Image (cartoon, rainbow, N blue to C red; front, side, top):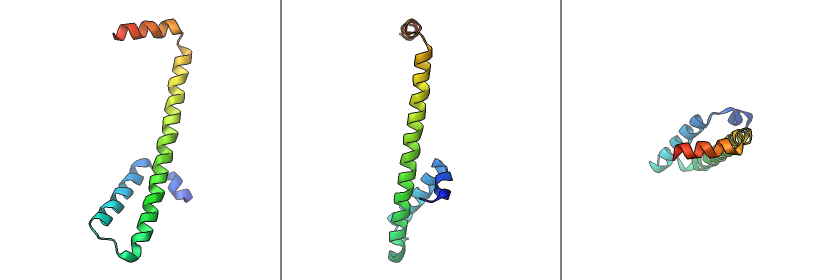
Length: 83
């Protein structure tokens, strides 16, 4: 994976991946280029997976920091309000 790939946004990676998939499904890819397209698709899938995992960890960390900041009694009263 290149430095350029690390900078690519998730949406752009998905857009490129969908384009590759469409070209393959519609048999627009020359057999000589198929290997390169599949390799690129694999790179993009890996990149997207890493971005999802990183985001999930960051979100979990943020949520956990809120749970630590709120005393348990406040969390219980918040839960009761929602019911």
